[in-house]
Image (cartoon, rainbow, N blue to C red; front, top):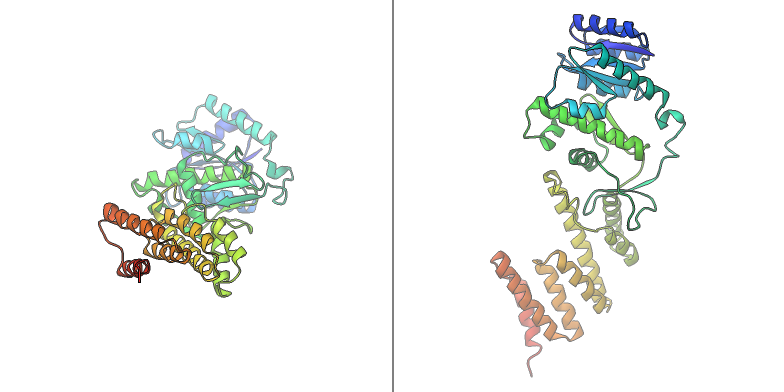
Length: 385
Protein backbone atom coordinates (compact mmCIF):
# COMPACT_ATOMS: atom_id res chain seq x y z
CA UNK A 1 0.00 0.00 0.00
CA UNK A 2 1.26 3.43 -0.94
CA UNK A 3 0.85 6.52 1.23
CA UNK A 4 1.81 10.18 1.32
CA UNK A 5 2.07 12.37 4.42
CA UNK A 6 1.06 16.04 4.62
CA UNK A 7 1.82 18.22 7.65
CA UNK A 8 3.27 21.70 7.95
CA UNK A 9 5.52 20.50 10.82
CA UNK A 10 8.57 18.63 9.50
CA UNK A 11 9.15 16.94 12.83
CA UNK A 12 5.63 15.51 12.77
CA UNK A 13 6.21 14.17 9.25
CA UNK A 14 9.45 12.49 10.25
CA UNK A 15 7.91 10.99 13.38
CA UNK A 16 4.90 9.56 11.52
CA UNK A 17 7.12 8.19 8.76
CA UNK A 18 9.24 6.31 11.30
CA UNK A 19 6.15 4.80 12.92
CA UNK A 20 4.87 3.64 9.53
CA UNK A 21 8.26 2.20 8.57
CA UNK A 22 8.39 0.29 11.85
CA UNK A 23 4.98 -1.22 11.15
CA UNK A 24 6.03 -2.21 7.66
CA UNK A 25 2.62 -2.37 5.95
CA UNK A 26 2.77 0.97 4.10
CA UNK A 27 5.30 2.51 1.77
CA UNK A 28 5.67 6.26 2.21
CA UNK A 29 5.95 7.73 -1.29
CA UNK A 30 6.28 11.36 -0.24
CA UNK A 31 6.26 13.84 2.65
CA UNK A 32 4.97 17.39 2.14
CA UNK A 33 4.70 20.48 4.30
CA UNK A 34 1.90 22.03 2.23
CA UNK A 35 -1.39 20.66 1.01
CA UNK A 36 -0.76 21.95 -2.50
CA UNK A 37 2.50 19.99 -2.76
CA UNK A 38 0.68 16.86 -1.73
CA UNK A 39 -2.04 17.48 -4.31
CA UNK A 40 0.60 17.93 -6.99
CA UNK A 41 2.01 14.53 -6.07
CA UNK A 42 -1.42 12.89 -6.30
CA UNK A 43 -2.10 14.49 -9.65
CA UNK A 44 1.04 12.82 -11.02
CA UNK A 45 1.13 9.55 -9.07
CA UNK A 46 -1.65 7.65 -7.33
CA UNK A 47 -1.57 6.74 -3.63
CA UNK A 48 -3.84 4.50 -1.60
CA UNK A 49 -3.85 6.56 1.59
CA UNK A 50 -3.19 10.15 2.54
CA UNK A 51 -2.31 11.08 6.13
CA UNK A 52 -3.05 14.78 6.44
CA UNK A 53 -2.94 17.33 9.23
CA UNK A 54 -6.08 19.41 9.68
CA UNK A 55 -4.60 22.66 10.94
CA UNK A 56 -2.33 24.00 8.20
CA UNK A 57 -1.90 27.50 6.75
CA UNK A 58 -3.07 28.48 3.26
CA UNK A 59 -5.07 25.27 2.69
CA UNK A 60 -6.16 23.22 5.69
CA UNK A 61 -6.71 19.48 5.72
CA UNK A 62 -10.47 19.74 5.29
CA UNK A 63 -10.14 21.80 2.13
CA UNK A 64 -7.37 19.57 0.81
CA UNK A 65 -9.55 16.51 1.39
CA UNK A 66 -12.10 18.00 -1.01
CA UNK A 67 -9.48 18.30 -3.73
CA UNK A 68 -8.22 14.77 -3.03
CA UNK A 69 -11.74 13.41 -3.47
CA UNK A 70 -11.98 15.23 -6.79
CA UNK A 71 -8.69 13.75 -7.97
CA UNK A 72 -9.62 10.20 -6.96
CA UNK A 73 -12.63 9.28 -4.84
CA UNK A 74 -11.04 5.92 -3.98
CA UNK A 75 -8.12 7.47 -2.11
CA UNK A 76 -8.55 6.95 1.64
CA UNK A 77 -7.94 9.88 3.95
CA UNK A 78 -6.72 9.74 7.53
CA UNK A 79 -6.83 13.03 9.42
CA UNK A 80 -4.05 13.77 11.85
CA UNK A 81 -5.27 16.40 14.30
CA UNK A 82 -4.71 18.14 17.58
CA UNK A 83 -8.42 19.01 17.81
CA UNK A 84 -10.23 17.00 20.45
CA UNK A 85 -13.30 19.08 21.29
CA UNK A 86 -15.89 19.09 18.53
CA UNK A 87 -14.34 17.62 15.39
CA UNK A 88 -13.37 14.09 16.28
CA UNK A 89 -16.81 12.53 16.57
CA UNK A 90 -17.68 13.68 13.07
CA UNK A 91 -14.34 12.69 11.53
CA UNK A 92 -14.49 9.23 13.05
CA UNK A 93 -17.66 8.46 11.14
CA UNK A 94 -16.95 10.23 7.88
CA UNK A 95 -13.32 9.44 6.98
CA UNK A 96 -11.36 6.24 7.10
CA UNK A 97 -9.88 7.19 10.47
CA UNK A 98 -8.28 9.95 12.51
CA UNK A 99 -5.16 10.13 14.65
CA UNK A 100 -4.74 12.45 17.59
CA UNK A 101 -1.40 14.15 18.06
CA UNK A 102 0.92 12.96 19.42
CA UNK A 103 0.43 9.78 17.44
CA UNK A 104 1.03 6.55 19.39
CA UNK A 105 2.24 3.32 17.80
CA UNK A 106 -0.63 1.23 19.21
CA UNK A 107 -3.29 3.64 17.92
CA UNK A 108 -1.57 3.82 14.53
CA UNK A 109 -1.60 0.01 14.34
CA UNK A 110 -5.38 0.01 14.78
CA UNK A 111 -5.69 2.54 11.99
CA UNK A 112 -3.55 0.40 9.69
CA UNK A 113 -5.71 -2.63 10.54
CA UNK A 114 -8.75 -0.66 9.46
CA UNK A 115 -7.02 0.48 6.27
CA UNK A 116 -6.07 -3.10 5.36
CA UNK A 117 -9.64 -4.31 5.96
CA UNK A 118 -11.11 -1.49 3.88
CA UNK A 119 -8.79 -2.05 0.94
CA UNK A 120 -9.51 -5.79 1.06
CA UNK A 121 -13.25 -5.01 0.72
CA UNK A 122 -13.43 -2.30 -1.98
CA UNK A 123 -16.55 -0.16 -2.47
CA UNK A 124 -19.15 -1.22 -4.99
CA UNK A 125 -18.01 1.45 -7.44
CA UNK A 126 -14.72 -0.44 -7.89
CA UNK A 127 -16.53 -3.76 -8.38
CA UNK A 128 -18.12 -2.79 -11.67
CA UNK A 129 -21.35 -1.22 -10.42
CA UNK A 130 -22.15 1.43 -12.99
CA UNK A 131 -24.50 4.38 -12.94
CA UNK A 132 -26.82 2.42 -15.23
CA UNK A 133 -27.04 -0.35 -12.61
CA UNK A 134 -27.72 1.95 -9.68
CA UNK A 135 -31.31 2.25 -8.46
CA UNK A 136 -33.44 4.81 -10.26
CA UNK A 137 -34.80 7.36 -7.83
CA UNK A 138 -37.72 9.70 -7.53
CA UNK A 139 -37.01 12.90 -5.62
CA UNK A 140 -39.88 14.91 -4.20
CA UNK A 141 -39.67 18.40 -2.72
CA UNK A 142 -43.33 19.32 -2.40
CA UNK A 143 -44.32 19.18 1.28
CA UNK A 144 -41.01 17.56 2.31
CA UNK A 145 -37.83 16.12 0.85
CA UNK A 146 -38.33 12.49 -0.08
CA UNK A 147 -35.97 10.24 -2.00
CA UNK A 148 -37.58 7.02 -3.18
CA UNK A 149 -36.57 4.32 -5.57
CA UNK A 150 -38.99 4.05 -8.48
CA UNK A 151 -41.84 1.79 -7.41
CA UNK A 152 -41.19 2.51 -3.74
CA UNK A 153 -44.12 4.90 -3.28
CA UNK A 154 -46.20 2.25 -1.53
CA UNK A 155 -47.06 2.71 2.12
CA UNK A 156 -44.39 1.22 4.36
CA UNK A 157 -41.51 1.67 1.91
CA UNK A 158 -38.17 2.23 3.60
CA UNK A 159 -37.30 5.96 3.39
CA UNK A 160 -33.95 7.47 2.57
CA UNK A 161 -32.30 8.22 5.92
CA UNK A 162 -29.91 11.08 6.57
CA UNK A 163 -27.19 10.93 9.20
CA UNK A 164 -28.06 14.43 10.44
CA UNK A 165 -30.66 17.09 9.76
CA UNK A 166 -27.92 19.42 8.53
CA UNK A 167 -26.73 16.97 5.89
CA UNK A 168 -30.33 16.76 4.70
CA UNK A 169 -30.59 20.55 4.62
CA UNK A 170 -27.31 20.89 2.75
CA UNK A 171 -28.48 18.38 0.14
CA UNK A 172 -31.77 20.27 -0.13
CA UNK A 173 -29.95 23.60 -0.50
CA UNK A 174 -27.76 22.29 -3.32
CA UNK A 175 -30.81 20.70 -4.95
CA UNK A 176 -32.58 24.05 -4.59
CA UNK A 177 -29.89 25.63 -6.80
CA UNK A 178 -30.57 23.12 -9.60
CA UNK A 179 -27.03 22.16 -10.56
CA UNK A 180 -25.52 25.64 -10.19
CA UNK A 181 -22.21 26.08 -8.37
CA UNK A 182 -22.67 27.40 -4.82
CA UNK A 183 -19.78 29.05 -2.98
CA UNK A 184 -18.58 27.83 0.38
CA UNK A 185 -19.30 31.27 1.87
CA UNK A 186 -22.90 31.10 0.69
CA UNK A 187 -23.34 27.68 2.24
CA UNK A 188 -21.86 28.78 5.56
CA UNK A 189 -24.03 31.92 5.68
CA UNK A 190 -27.21 30.02 4.85
CA UNK A 191 -26.78 26.93 7.02
CA UNK A 192 -24.41 27.79 9.87
CA UNK A 193 -24.68 31.57 10.43
CA UNK A 194 -24.54 31.19 14.22
CA UNK A 195 -21.13 29.48 14.33
CA UNK A 196 -17.61 30.85 14.33
CA UNK A 197 -16.01 30.37 10.91
CA UNK A 198 -13.67 27.52 11.94
CA UNK A 199 -16.44 25.49 13.54
CA UNK A 200 -18.85 26.23 10.69
CA UNK A 201 -16.31 24.89 8.19
CA UNK A 202 -16.01 21.67 10.20
CA UNK A 203 -19.79 21.24 10.15
CA UNK A 204 -19.84 21.90 6.40
CA UNK A 205 -17.21 19.29 5.63
CA UNK A 206 -18.81 16.77 7.95
CA UNK A 207 -22.12 17.20 6.12
CA UNK A 208 -20.34 16.92 2.77
CA UNK A 209 -18.88 13.56 3.80
CA UNK A 210 -22.27 12.36 5.01
CA UNK A 211 -23.95 13.29 1.74
CA UNK A 212 -21.27 11.60 -0.35
CA UNK A 213 -21.55 8.46 1.72
CA UNK A 214 -25.34 8.43 1.29
CA UNK A 215 -25.05 9.01 -2.46
CA UNK A 216 -22.65 6.09 -2.86
CA UNK A 217 -25.14 3.84 -1.11
CA UNK A 218 -28.37 4.91 -2.80
CA UNK A 219 -27.75 7.34 -5.69
CA UNK A 220 -24.54 6.28 -7.39
CA UNK A 221 -25.26 8.30 -10.54
CA UNK A 222 -25.40 11.54 -8.52
CA UNK A 223 -22.20 13.32 -7.51
CA UNK A 224 -21.47 16.14 -5.10
CA UNK A 225 -18.73 18.05 -6.91
CA UNK A 226 -16.22 20.59 -5.63
CA UNK A 227 -14.22 23.20 -7.53
CA UNK A 228 -12.71 26.57 -6.64
CA UNK A 229 -14.33 26.65 -3.17
CA UNK A 230 -17.73 25.90 -4.71
CA UNK A 231 -20.07 22.90 -4.61
CA UNK A 232 -22.83 21.56 -6.81
CA UNK A 233 -24.95 18.44 -7.32
CA UNK A 234 -24.37 16.72 -10.64
CA UNK A 235 -27.59 14.73 -11.07
CA UNK A 236 -26.93 13.21 -14.50
CA UNK A 237 -30.35 14.02 -15.87
CA UNK A 238 -32.98 13.27 -13.24
CA UNK A 239 -35.36 16.02 -12.11
CA UNK A 240 -37.54 16.60 -9.06
CA UNK A 241 -41.32 16.84 -8.84
CA UNK A 242 -40.91 20.61 -8.44
CA UNK A 243 -38.96 20.97 -11.67
CA UNK A 244 -41.45 18.75 -13.50
CA UNK A 245 -44.26 20.93 -12.15
CA UNK A 246 -42.58 24.20 -13.16
CA UNK A 247 -41.75 23.04 -16.66
CA UNK A 248 -45.19 21.57 -17.23
CA UNK A 249 -47.03 24.66 -16.00
CA UNK A 250 -44.88 26.91 -18.19
CA UNK A 251 -45.58 24.74 -21.25
CA UNK A 252 -49.28 24.67 -20.39
CA UNK A 253 -49.42 28.47 -20.11
CA UNK A 254 -47.48 28.93 -23.36
CA UNK A 255 -49.89 26.66 -25.21
CA UNK A 256 -52.88 28.83 -24.29
CA UNK A 257 -53.87 27.07 -21.07
CA UNK A 258 -55.55 24.19 -22.86
CA UNK A 259 -55.53 20.49 -22.09
CA UNK A 260 -57.34 19.75 -18.84
CA UNK A 261 -55.90 16.22 -18.30
CA UNK A 262 -52.38 17.58 -18.64
CA UNK A 263 -52.85 20.33 -16.06
CA UNK A 264 -54.69 17.92 -13.73
CA UNK A 265 -51.65 15.64 -13.64
CA UNK A 266 -49.34 18.58 -12.97
CA UNK A 267 -51.49 19.94 -10.16
CA UNK A 268 -51.51 16.47 -8.60
CA UNK A 269 -47.74 16.79 -8.11
CA UNK A 270 -48.38 19.59 -5.64
CA UNK A 271 -48.72 17.51 -2.43
CA UNK A 272 -47.99 20.53 -0.25
CA UNK A 273 -45.93 23.70 -0.22
CA UNK A 274 -42.27 23.50 -1.24
CA UNK A 275 -40.19 21.88 1.57
CA UNK A 276 -42.93 23.03 3.94
CA UNK A 277 -42.29 20.49 6.69
CA UNK A 278 -38.63 21.48 6.98
CA UNK A 279 -39.29 25.23 7.24
CA UNK A 280 -35.94 26.26 5.74
CA UNK A 281 -35.71 30.09 5.70
CA UNK A 282 -33.82 30.08 2.39
CA UNK A 283 -36.73 28.23 0.74
CA UNK A 284 -39.40 30.84 1.58
CA UNK A 285 -39.20 32.87 -1.63
CA UNK A 286 -39.40 29.84 -3.92
CA UNK A 287 -42.17 28.36 -1.76
CA UNK A 288 -44.30 31.46 -2.26
CA UNK A 289 -43.59 31.58 -5.99
CA UNK A 290 -44.60 27.94 -6.45
CA UNK A 291 -47.67 28.39 -4.26
CA UNK A 292 -48.79 31.37 -6.32
CA UNK A 293 -48.21 29.39 -9.52
CA UNK A 294 -50.29 26.50 -8.20
CA UNK A 295 -53.15 28.72 -7.04
CA UNK A 296 -53.25 30.64 -10.32
CA UNK A 297 -53.38 27.48 -12.42
CA UNK A 298 -55.90 25.71 -10.19
CA UNK A 299 -58.11 28.81 -10.15
CA UNK A 300 -57.92 29.12 -13.93
CA UNK A 301 -58.93 25.48 -14.25
CA UNK A 302 -61.88 26.12 -11.94
CA UNK A 303 -62.92 29.08 -14.15
CA UNK A 304 -62.72 26.88 -17.24
CA UNK A 305 -64.95 24.34 -15.51
CA UNK A 306 -67.46 27.09 -14.73
CA UNK A 307 -67.42 28.30 -18.35
CA UNK A 308 -67.95 24.78 -19.70
CA UNK A 309 -70.81 23.92 -17.35
CA UNK A 310 -68.87 21.55 -15.08
CA UNK A 311 -69.99 23.56 -12.09
CA UNK A 312 -70.10 20.85 -9.44
CA UNK A 313 -66.58 19.77 -10.39
CA UNK A 314 -65.49 23.39 -10.06
CA UNK A 315 -67.07 23.65 -6.60
CA UNK A 316 -65.13 20.61 -5.36
CA UNK A 317 -61.89 22.02 -6.72
CA UNK A 318 -62.51 25.42 -5.16
CA UNK A 319 -63.40 23.94 -1.77
CA UNK A 320 -60.11 22.03 -1.85
CA UNK A 321 -58.27 25.21 -2.78
CA UNK A 322 -59.97 27.08 0.03
CA UNK A 323 -58.51 24.64 2.55
CA UNK A 324 -55.06 25.65 1.35
CA UNK A 325 -55.89 29.36 1.07
CA UNK A 326 -58.71 30.22 3.49
CA UNK A 327 -58.11 33.99 3.16
CA UNK A 328 -58.28 34.22 -0.65
CA UNK A 329 -60.91 36.67 -1.96
CA UNK A 330 -60.43 35.25 -5.46
CA UNK A 331 -61.37 31.73 -4.38
CA UNK A 332 -64.31 33.05 -2.34
CA UNK A 333 -65.60 34.96 -5.36
CA UNK A 334 -65.35 31.93 -7.63
CA UNK A 335 -67.24 29.82 -5.12
CA UNK A 336 -69.99 32.45 -4.88
CA UNK A 337 -70.28 32.41 -8.67
CA UNK A 338 -70.37 28.60 -8.75
CA UNK A 339 -73.11 28.40 -6.12
CA UNK A 340 -75.09 30.99 -8.04
CA UNK A 341 -74.82 28.90 -11.24
CA UNK A 342 -76.22 25.97 -9.28
CA UNK A 343 -78.98 28.17 -7.88
CA UNK A 344 -77.83 27.34 -4.37
CA UNK A 345 -77.97 30.82 -2.84
CA UNK A 346 -78.18 29.43 0.69
CA UNK A 347 -74.79 27.79 0.24
CA UNK A 348 -73.43 31.06 -1.21
CA UNK A 349 -74.67 33.01 1.81
CA UNK A 350 -73.23 30.52 4.31
CA UNK A 351 -69.91 30.50 2.52
CA UNK A 352 -69.62 34.28 2.44
CA UNK A 353 -70.59 34.66 6.11
CA UNK A 354 -68.01 32.03 7.06
CA UNK A 355 -65.38 33.83 4.98
CA UNK A 356 -66.16 37.13 6.74
CA UNK A 357 -65.79 35.52 10.17
CA UNK A 358 -62.45 33.92 9.32
CA UNK A 359 -61.00 37.20 8.05
CA UNK A 360 -62.25 39.12 11.08
CA UNK A 361 -61.27 36.56 13.73
CA UNK A 362 -57.87 35.58 12.36
CA UNK A 363 -56.65 38.64 10.45
CA UNK A 364 -58.82 41.50 11.71
CA UNK A 365 -59.78 42.58 8.17
CA UNK A 366 -62.83 42.59 5.91
CA UNK A 367 -63.32 41.03 2.45
CA UNK A 368 -62.21 43.08 -0.53
CA UNK A 369 -64.81 45.44 -1.97
CA UNK A 370 -65.15 43.42 -5.18
CA UNK A 371 -65.97 40.28 -3.17
CA UNK A 372 -68.54 42.12 -1.06
CA UNK A 373 -70.17 43.64 -4.16
CA UNK A 374 -70.41 40.22 -5.80
CA UNK A 375 -72.13 38.86 -2.71
CA UNK A 376 -74.58 41.80 -2.61
CA UNK A 377 -75.33 41.30 -6.31
CA UNK A 378 -76.03 37.59 -5.80
CA UNK A 379 -78.11 38.30 -2.72
CA UNK A 380 -80.39 40.70 -4.62
CA UNK A 381 -81.10 37.95 -7.15
CA UNK A 382 -82.81 35.92 -4.41
CA UNK A 383 -85.26 38.73 -3.50
CA UNK A 384 -88.80 38.51 -4.89
CA UNK A 385 -89.57 40.72 -7.88
